[in-house]
Structures are given as structure tokens and as C-alpha cells.
Length: 139
Length: 361
Image: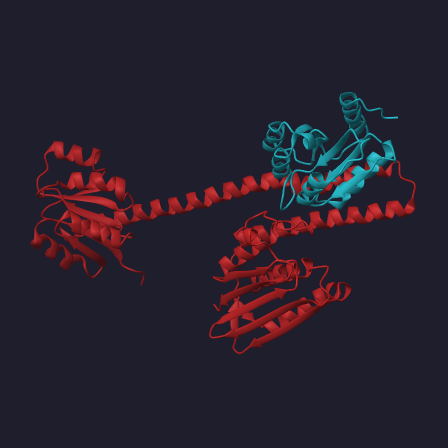
């Protein structure tokens, strides 16, 4: 596979839903789940990629205890460029707060934002965008 | 009788000061000063001085000039000018520059002084009340902001989860998978329910009055034993209770229970899953007019740099369990109502101890 996924969220149900949605598109995708953004960051720093993987799509929740989505992105932006290039971060949040939305838009690492709950159509159009940018075939 | 109203009188003539004090000392706490530095000393030492009388004609500084300075440094006390001569210019000056509350003419009549003080005191009280109400309003606003913000996450979060689950369920055919999802949906809804219940606690703590009554800790704790029996047995946690109530204790049971319940629920919730001998220990000692309550656990502990923030509204220091960020804030509010104190000691991965001291009412 050329694409894999990481879900960072402090709610189990949201992990379940996102996994299920991704599985419905293609059951062969690898999906890693993290309840704790700090552990996800550790994983990203130390992980050796399968050479086939072109990009990892990260669904990142914003409101989380300990390390929140913003803190995660700030730490992420300090990583080597080669690592950063491998990840495509999407804010996946239930927040409808304008301040959150503006703040998300202010980080270049947030490639886009999706309001929960994620829908099959929303996921499909996101995957099409990612596929086009990274030259990935989705079939 | 309530405490006497504090007033200050500044005049360069000793005789005036003596006469003034003699006239008013029975009804008021009178401070006198023969020069500006002494007057300022009094004001610093007694910030609750409510009314200041000042002679207009003094060497070095006029009464108006003194009041003009005080407007910046001690704006709260009411300013009254005592003056023997009243040309229109000095009247205009004293109002515009000194922003005085009243004029009293020298030589004074006692009734005039008293009525000036009483009127000034009414003004002072109204102003102070306004300041207090303003502070409360500010706090209420900032908490409202926090609420509005949390609604978007803590209420919309679980709801969007449930909506998402319903979406997913449309294409789900495996019963086992469905059950798993239902279990997670239930968890999300319980979290939402906890949030709403805590919000209710929050509100009643902020607005409710105290209802003081006799507290029997033994009886109260029996209720908690019942509540936590299941949690203790399913998670294999040893719940130890020691109560030593040597004397009657008076307090309001509602906030008291809230404190105990939140601390116990945290102690059970944030257990270290890798610890074999899990313990929650509740100690209550009532002695010498105070209850000392400690709740200890063998849980995951709290990182030192989070300790200062755990009592803040919506602060959560762990991703292990679903906290609402209300619990310890409500504990702190409840203790504030009961004039109690709380301290916390925690070692990461070893456990946490909360110690609460509440005076009997």
C-alpha cells in the first residue's frame, strides 16, 4: 500500500468510527491508533517506513488532555523536514469554535480540517485530494 | 454591634483634632493626623478607612491638594473638606480637583459631622458593593466563556461520536462488531451524562446556600461503601476505610459529600492498571473542631508540572480515563464554601494523596 493512517484521539468511539470508515474504503489499509498525542509523536519520530508508503494520513483531534492537537503540531513542525514530508495532517474535531478553526488554519502543517463526525463522502474526497497530490492510486 | 466605621481627620491644629476625636470617638473609630505623612501612614495601615475629613488651610499643602493626590493613591474613602472660609473659587476647586463628597463648615456642629459621616458611609458601602458585584460579574463572564468553549467539545464531542456511529452502523452487518460499537457509544453517552451532572453540581455550588447540620461520618461513609463496592470488586481494588470521629461535627452535607465523592471516584478511576495490590484508602479524623480527611490511592499519579493546574476548570491531567475536567474544580469550590483547605501529594506511577481539612461550623 502507498498510503497508511494514524488516528490520534482521546475518545475510543471516534477511533472506532474512523477505523471503520477507512476500512470501508479499503480493508487493507494499515491504521494505527493513539489515545495520547505524545505517544503518537514518539512513534512518528522513531518509525521506519515501509518504502512503499508515500504518505501517512494523520487524523488529529484537537481537544485532548496532556498534549492537545496544537501542541502536537508545534512539536511536529520541529521535526526533520524529511519526516514531516511523509505525513499529511488533518484536523478532525468536533469543535465549532471560531477561535479553534482560525488557529487550525494558522498552522501550515494542518493540511485541512474535517468536522466530526467524518462521513464516507468526506473521507472519499479527502482521499482523492491526497491521492492526486502524492500520485497514489486508490484502487 | 458591628465594627465601628473608621474615619480619619487631618488638620494642622491640634485643638481641632482633639475636639473632633472627643466628639466622635464613641460612635466611630477615629484616627487623627497633624500632618500629611501621618495621615498617609494611617491610610496605609488601615486600608478600610471609609471617610476622610481634611482641613483646607494647612501649611505646605491645602486640603484640596491633599484630596487631589488621594484620588489617585487611595480612591476608596469618601472625602470631606472642613473649611472656615468659603470663597467660590475654593469651592469650585475642591469639587473639580478634590472631587469631594461634602463640605462641612468650621466651626462644625456635631449633628452636621454625624450626618456627613453617615451619608458618606452609605456611598462608600454602595461603591464597595458595586466593586464586589463587578468582580463577581467578571468571574462569571470568564467562566461563561469557558463553558461556551467546552460545550463545543464536551457536549458536541460525544454527540458527534454517536452520529458518526449511526452513520457507520448503516453498513455494518456483524453483530459482534455492532455490540462493540454499542459499548463504546454507551461509554460516550455516560461521559456526556457525567459532564451534565457535574455541570449541575457546579451550578448549585456557585448559587446554593449553606445548610448546616450535624454530620455523622460513619453513616455518610456507609453510603460511599455501597456506591464503590462494585467498582472495588470488579477492578480488584482494596477499599480501606478508617473513621475516628471523637466529637460532633457540623457542616453542610451536600458539598461535603461532593468533595468525598469526587476524590474517591478519582482514586478508583485513575488506578494504575499494572499495580497488583490496588488500594484506595479513606481516613477521616474529627478532632478539635475540624475534620481531616485523606484519600490515597495506588494510582497513576500526577506529573509535578500538572499539580498546580488540576484544580482549574476543564483541566485534565490524564488521557487514561474519561474525565470531564470538572471534578477537582468542584471540589475546590465546595471547600471554599466550607472554609476548607486541600493539599495534594503525588508520585507518578505510585499514587496520589489528597488531604482535606474542614472546620466544624
